[in-house]
Amino acid sequence: MTSLNPSAPRSFTHQDLTRLKKFLADNLLRALEMEGVPAGDRNAFVRKNIGAIFEQTKLKLPEDMRAQIFDQVLNDLLGYGPIQSLLDDPDISEIMVNGPKKIFVEKNGKLTKSTVTFDDDDHVVRVIDRIILPLGRRVDFDSPTVDARLPDGSRVNAVVRPVAIDGPSITIRKFRKDKLQAEDLINFGSLTRQMADFLQACVRARFNIVISGGTGSGKTTLLNVMSGYIPENERIITIEDAAELQLQQDHVMRMETKPANADGQHAVTIRELVKNSLRMRPDRIVVGEVRGGEALDMLQAMNTGHDGSLTTVHANQPRDAISRIETLVLMAGMDLPLKVVRQQISSAVDLIVQQTRLKDGQRKVTAVTEVAGMEGEIIVLTDIFKFNQTGVTTDGKVLGEVNATGIRPNFTPRLEAAGFKLSADVFAPPKASSNPNSRR
Image (cartoon, rainbow, N blue to C red; front, side, top):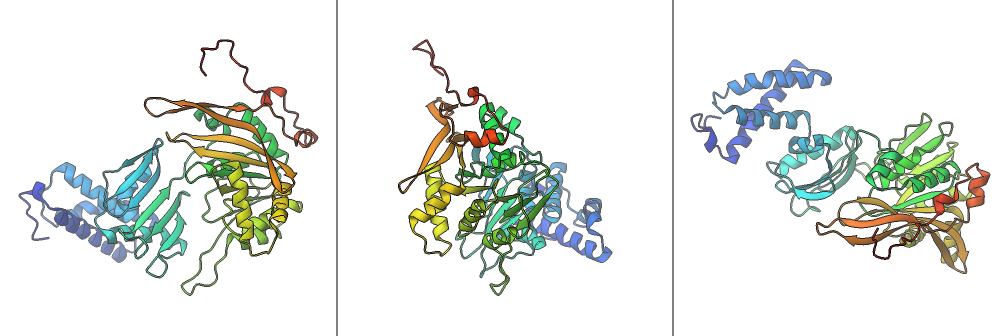
């Protein structure tokens, strides 16, 4: 530290500040080890001792600069480095680290570049290690990608060299501390009251439902909300790559995939977990996302008495969701004719709920579509609710409404047999305005 000039704190270079933070962090870590401080007391110990260690440097810093450096060191030791402040911001929903100096965030639906930065590539890797090591996962040259989660449930993906050409990358989909309810989605404009009532009836009547949507469209949030309609007295098995579902029922068994070890062995896949779940006496199977051959096992489960299942799939339209499921089923390695695959899908899946992130950042359910059976070799889809875009404002906000199409689903008798007699208003399309010049 002798090369730092106490008389000119404002002239510190980036390298000087990095060395100062490293000095403080190294001495605090050494003190923690020597004192044998329990994990639960580390926070208080570090906050108590950082000032005394700083005094050893004999540096005279302005209070604001000193406080900023202390915060950065505390975040490095106790949190997740520079991105800790972004994780603490409740308005930020996603954090994207594209190397040490390029950090972007999604805040209130808008993507912007953050002012926070890492020191260098090694700094980013240290934060990645802090995230994944408690979970028993690893990331290195031979295994350069990893999926993980933070203690609060936030989803994390990390990529390092040689795959990440411009430096290590971190993508964090933040976990909401307050669990959203259907009422919240209605207030946000993501759902209408009629759609919420209809979806609640379908879940309680044990229909098999696929939530379709693109990346970041809100599929998992909607899956959380819809799973809340499952009655308390049913046994629910959840299966995910990284556990993030927040089911509130008491009788829930959660399972998560396991990556391969250093030898590339002993991985546990979603497909294996789906097969195993059938031996666990499930009333409902909820799969966070189907993305491989487990789609076939899921369809077979739906077709053999395990109705009321819920899952998500990546697709931009209900018809695309059907095509996507067809492709995933074929990935199972079974030599099945396409017509047989489509028959499996049409008999297993009752409803597709399309979730979309619009160009202005709004997240909406843009279609609720019945899988109405087969005509020849084609699966018939019928929209029950549909979003109609009517325009875009000068500031880019998308205008439009979700309305019933006026078509009652073919499975209405099944709903009524399960005790859900929905009023005609639920399926009634909007009445045409008598004023030809009026606009919705």
